[in-house]
Length: 158
Image (cartoon, rainbow, N blue to C red; front, side, top):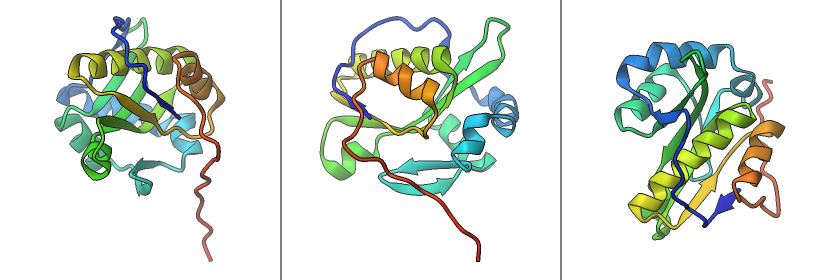
């Protein structure tokens, strides 16, 4: 999915993840339906990688991990982002590498990311997400358009 409508709108419960939250976020992922559905994979420039704890730590250290917090202050959403599309494709863009959460969490994290892109002058956001209907619906509501085709990634052990 993608959008070119990076508007400035305050997020309610999303922010950049702090280093001290790594364990809590990793625990969240271990019970996440989206993490399971996506086979624990994230993508950068159409290359798929296994999302392990050291990868999560690296995203957090580079301030490329957005967390959504529930009303109780617990993580209930995660979005990982990367700017290699800008460098490799020579365009002013950012991509999500992994999006996890239910509708409200994804909607708010997208709002946070759009606001960040608006302030930073980023013109296009690519939203890579597994086939999780609440996340797709949230991104569509935020103005992300669906691609004309769908990529399916799987592995079969022989």
